[in-house]
Amino acid sequence: MFDAVVLGGGLAGLTAALRAREAGRSVALIDPDPDQGAGANSRISGGVFHLAWGAMDEPPEELVRRMVDQTDGEVDPQLARELAENCGPAIRWLAGHGVDLAPKGPRPHDRFTCQPWLEARGDTAQPDRGAEIALATLRARARVAGVQRTAGSANALWHRPDGWHVGVAGREELIGRCVIVATGGFQANPTMMRAFVGPHADDVFLRSTRSAAGDGLRLLIGAGAALTEPSSAVYGHLLSATAAREPRLWPQPTVDAVARRGLLVDRDGHAFTPNADNGIALVNAMVRTGDPSGFTVVFDSRTHAEASAERDSDGSPRATQTDGHLRDVTELIERGAEVIGPASITDIAVQLRIPRAQLKWSVAAWAGGASDSSSWYAMRVLPGITATMCGVRVDARCRVLGRDGQPLPGLRAAGDVVGVHGGPRGGYLGGLAVALISGYISGSRR
Image (cartoon, rainbow, N blue to C red):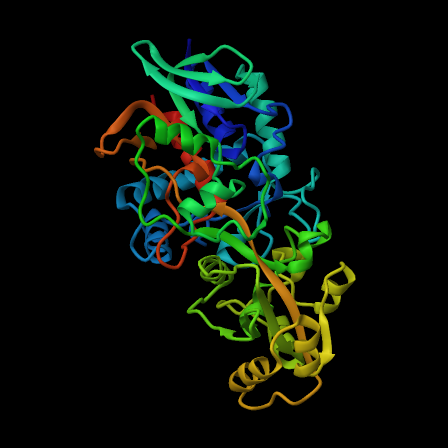
């Protein structure tokens, strides 16, 4: 019998386990790879901690405002308040455990970045950089603190008078007075993607580790947990379609800026112009179509120059090597991406097997008639899905809520298995921040 059994050895799970152990409780952590944490999605993140694009040390009132704005008012107000109140303490706790955090640029959301920060070099994981260092630090701290690590996957969860029983594949079950589920989302599960995101949402690129298969979410649903609604949004960025066979093209660099500045067309040459003010919203619009992998961005040298010079609202320039967003098509080609051009629209249509007349009409309408030159470029793109936003409902203490709206005794959740991001535009609140803060809260409370 343990005071707490934690499912998942990523950022949320490690934080919850270590916080619970610091409170004097006996803790077991279950993960397929508890020594290395190979399945943690945060391993391939940029290591940037922000809450709704705000700095982690901003006043709670400002952070709540940001969360409400990002989700168009759909974030639970009590949960938003608790996340904001614990944001500063959680990031100070992380730094206190030896994780080096420093600004990588002038923007508020860059203020707390794992050092040295991730390079936009296309490696799936960089053990010497970014969040990998933070995870390794927390794993070492958890070992020293006495967290019992169990290798395996939780495949059953049921409640008995003596507590929650967790079945572990190939082992007898563990029993906990409290169970904290922190197993990530379900973006690597095609069936769940179709069921919860959209009928064609599995036709995307997995810009994520393959461990996020929805195991924890299924266990929680089976235990009576309620889901957030609406809950079909995802977090991700656009990638060159060549990323499907070229590892140097993901998870960075993304091509959001070029796609937003250029013209997206489908396989038939029709313009795709959703109301999307950022790459995440654009990805959500694409995922909800009948053919998410069927898009091409058409652009010219002027569009490329504008994307390269794009600046944030505070006037600071964005640099490829610090934020992972590509603005140099030459660099993209050097990494192996297939980019057509400079060429005429007719040549592009022939090479991509897009109806010429429709493509010329779409480009002419978008460019104000200037579609006859030979200075056009084209690149097939894919929505790269990093995390899902559908998850279980929790209260301000990260207690899992049942379908009657009441907490399920002794059951908590943290990280991407919690439904906190979302809204009609796919409002993103910061995956690392939510994992850290929700793990901090769930591990701190009895």
